[in-house]
Length: 388
Ligand SMILES: Cc1ncc(COP(=O)(O)O)c(C=O)c1O
Image (cartoon, rainbow, N blue to C red; front, top):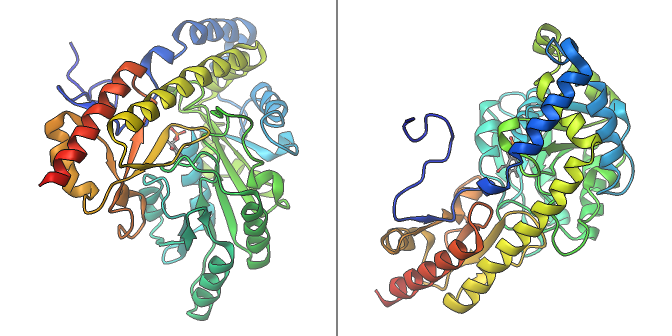
């Protein structure tokens, strides 16, 4: 028997219903469908499926992606604007490698995906949160921030943001702000790195147009991944960027040496896509994750009515503001004693200064019954923390 953590990242904790992990519900991972696609891809491509792959990724996947990306978004993406990666995290690391020099300022949304921070700090960037309000990044105040940084002689090559069904808030940046932000980036010579990880997990209607689709080429680099729609273990995703940027990616030394990344899996994904299995699978998981979202929301409304909760139209997360004076930190041991866990809000702020009164709750990994139990435990923990 393997010890916990020896095969997979997730380690369960006995007695704890854990709302901390942004992982898929295990039962929704497409074990049978994926193995069928793997067999078909090997039959179809033979030895070519197992040798070194083409630098930007195998043509069948790139063609399917170019076709498919237009469905869930506005505008189109050409095949020359796609580079296959090991997932969104890898995409971010590659883009940061090309754009960021040590000592640069990288702007990040506040709050935003906390695990982007170490990747950007690997480049020895200084992370600065953009000004935000309840609707997300504030373009006019961000313009002022950029002017201040320029006056101080700082180089600011990129801004990282998850504008659609964000991690951690579940929110979407409003349309006008999307337009203003890409306009600002173009004028300032700033590259927006749009992490579009959750676009296809839209529950209440289509996702808003991506920044990529709204911007002139050269302003936005978009990161995509199959981690949430198919399976994280594939370690497969893509970058959308203008042709010149894609050429820089294909010219990287380790691509020259080892060929396109994750070639065999990428070809299997092409089969999974073109066969229709992807479309069927995403439609099915969307239904399940929407039901999980609704179960957690319903549970919290009943058991924790004093939390202020965002209602996300997609993605995997709820952002909950705690009733003062309860803070995420003071609640943590109480929640633990009640058998429930979450991620503290401050972890999603680059300077760790915001989010003290908020928590991120993930509904992706647990079935509806357990989510309702988690909500009951969290509600009891909040009551008990307030009474102290
Ligand atoms: C916003 C965001 N970006 C990237 C990732 C990681 O994606 P990948 O597994 O493709 O590296 C996650 C996963 O939680 C995420 O929430």
